[in-house]
Every structure is written in structure tokens, then in C-alpha cells.
Image 1 (cartoon, rainbow over the protein chains, first blue to last red):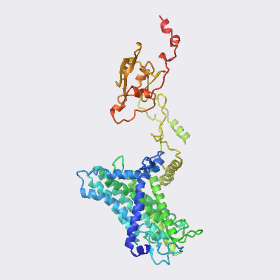
Image 2: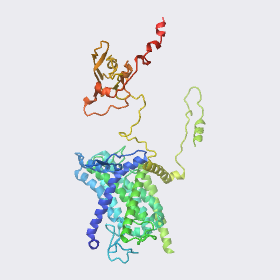
Image 3: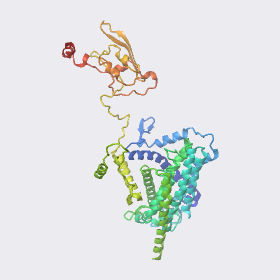
Image 4: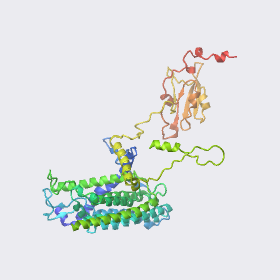
Length: 377
Length: 208
């Protein structure tokens, strides 16, 4: 089975896409809609939605599970809601916009390494390195040398989703929301790219899995400690890219309601879901570049120094810890989203262009000088 | 901090007496922009804020320490004793309705929600309600009926809300519905006991 997959990489890639999206990203995004409401409630001393429950027919058992099934109820509501299209919208662009919003972020998951390489044929053995492996299956959908550039290219496409939605809706408020979204996303894309530049210089590569390998299993070597400024700048700019509070000006419920004001039912649901998928993707990128990716502290290729583990266990453990890091960063983003108040548009622009951008340039200069000094010695 | 704040407020110049435009009379406390470096960097303040919300999050997650939510259908807030809820009709010792169909409550009711049809009891002295209906949809919960009642027959101390019903007719409570919530009341006329005439204030009779 694994030999077959190692020989037919296209089929393996399809399986990996299916696993990553259907078994991890989509469930996590759906759960985020529930977790966001529950977590915000907990932070504000409320309880939040905890009423949705499953009744097992026949047995009369009722599973409440802290209301986790709320996301099923929400999805059902969205799916069965009337798909209302206002009469004066530009029908083509109006239909394309939600797809333009969700497709780029789904595609960019292709470059995220969600585990270390599988060594086919030595799954149950204890191996010290991947050197002797004849065939490996990378746990990454596609290993591109331009890796992070691919991400930037697609991330800038996501602007079209929001802008087109705002423009095609034939509504002044959604147009304003779309304009705000485009200005905000373009401004912060600059910082986002430049803040990662330091990390690229440090790792000497653009390929995400190579970055993870460069960080190693010692947490003190992770990017966070070598690029602290870059980490803060990237996190700020990338949260602005997800258009969530404190950067939720395009949405701005009290004043605009947002670029998706004219969308209903599942079309709105797609915008909503895209936002959460962006959150997860941001967590994945931060994990890859700054938090050691799939590396587990102290876990070498042959297990811990005190406990040798077979190859398959090492790989599974790494993937699990990778998931845990993602979950933690999603939690952190929800915490930020429900703690900080929204910026004013002028504050947003001033921070983007006059504070974050010079700081990210400074970060590049400092990192470049340090890399130069290190190579000279 | 608090002391200096108070000082500044009191140190404002006293209001000059006499006419003319009032100048400098309002105690103004000038609050500067956040100007310490820590505040201007913004990041330490953000981290502090995240600390506060994270503290609440974990405390509420594991022990509901600060949670104030009352999960309504299962838990209820106890109302104060004088809260006015759904009506009820009280019983006598023998289980009969205390109401004597004196018609004071439908007369005083500003919403005209009480309907009483009196009938003879058969002993020649008393009336009783044949029909006693309260339309809870019309009731404005003013409590005047309770104040008007001379017999302690109608009360609003059930602590229950007018509940949601499927049909309007279900919101009209009849005599039996009202008696179901009722309890025996041994109150007597005047409210002081069987010998109320003896204890009654004589001043009205004695004053010329």
C-alpha cells in the first residue's frame, strides 16, 4: 500500500489533500465557529452556546457535549436558508466572490508540512536518520522550492474575494467594506512579506519543510528566538490579513456590517468559513516558520533520548504535536480577537505604513548583518 | 493614585461669587495621553490585556469562578417576596373558594381582565363566583385586584410568570386553574383576628 503510494505520488498527493482538508482543516474551521462563541463567553464571564445536543433514538440518551454540535446546527441552518440574490447585483462576480475568498486559502495549505517524511518499508523499525531510505513519502502536499512565495502570491489573490463581493453587491455599505478590505490587505501584505524576509535570510530557504528541518528539535533553536521582532510583526500583519478584530474594519458590524452584507445562506457561510480557515492557515504558517513546525522538543528521528520509538510512532507523534501547536495558535488568535478593540482606519494605516513597515525593514537589515557576521566567522 | 486624583479635584479654584460670566469655576482634571514608553509601544499593554482575559477564560473554563450566567429553565432566580406573578384564588378551611363575588376586583381592574359571574350559595347569606376568569394576556400586573380584595381571596404571590401558550384561550385562567395554585388562607376580615371588633380603633366613634 505505502509502496504503491510512494510510486504514484499523484495519488498520494490526492490522499494527503483529502486528509488535510477533510480530516483537519474543515472540521477545525467548523469547530472554530463554536469555539469562538464559547471562548468569548468564557472570557466575558458568560457560558455561551451549550444547548445543542444529540438524542440517540431508541435509547433516549442525550449527549450534550458542551454544545459542540452547535456547528452542525449552524451548518444546517445555512444550508437550508433561502439563497437571496438582490436584483441589481452583478450576477457573475457576485457568484464568483465567495469562491475567490475561500479558494486561495485552501490552495495555500498545499505547502504546509504537517509531519516529517515517512520512510516506506521501515515503519516499525527504529531508524536514526532518513539517509538510508530508498523511498519516502513527504507529509506535505507539494514540496515547492518557491514555497513561501507561492503563499504570498495566493494570499494577495484573496483580496479579490472581498473586493468583488463588496463591488458586485450594489450596496454602498458593502462597497465601503470592500474598499476598506482592499486597502487594509494591500497595506499589510507589504509588512507581511517583509517581516518574513528576516526568517528567509536566517534559514536560507523559502521551502517550508526545509525551514522546519533547519529549526531542529531543540526549542531554543526555533525561529521565535532568532526572529522575535519578525514573529511579532508577522503575527500582527497576518492577523490584519485575516480581517478579524482588532483589524475587522471591513466588517465593522456597528457601522458597515461588511462586504458580505448582501449575501445570505451558504454563500455567506463560505465567507464566514473562509475567515476561520485563514485563521488556521495563519497558525500553520506561524508554526512552520517560528515554532518549529512538526518538531517535538527533544524528539529525534529515533525517539527521545530516554525512550526509543519506532519510525511510525515518531511520525504520528510529530503530526499530533503539529496539530497541538495549531490549536494553541488558534486559541491565541481568538483570545486576541476578543480582547482588543478595533482600530480606526487612520490608526490602522499609520500603524501599517509608519510603524510596522520601518520595523520590518529594520528587522531585515539586522538579520542580514547578523547572517553576514556569522558567515564571516 | 486615588489620593492624588482627589487632591487635584479639590485644588480647583473656588467659584467667584457675584454676576458676570463664570470663569474657571469648573473643577477640571487634565488627563494626559498615555505617554510612558511602555504604553506607547502598545505591546506590553496588549499582553497585559490578554493576561486578564486569559485569566478569566481559564478560571471560568475549569471552575466557573466568575461566571454569572443563570441557566434559566433549570436554574431560576429567586424573586423578592413582593414580586407580582400569576394570580391565584385562596381556599377556606373547608376547601371552598374564599371569594364572595363582591365585584371589587373587576371594578378596580384597569385592564378589565377579570370576569366574575356570581351565584347564590344556597345558605341565604353569601354569594360565590360561578365564573371567575382572568385573561392573563390583558392583565397589566398592577396588583390593584389584590389590594381591593377584602377577603384575601385573590393573590399574586405565586412567583410564576405568565407562561407562553399555544392558543390565546389557554391564557384565560378559569376558577379551577386559579384555585389549583391556591392554598388555605385563614385570614379574617380586617386582618387582625377573630376579635377585630374589640381591638378596632375607637377614636373614630368617640370623636364628635
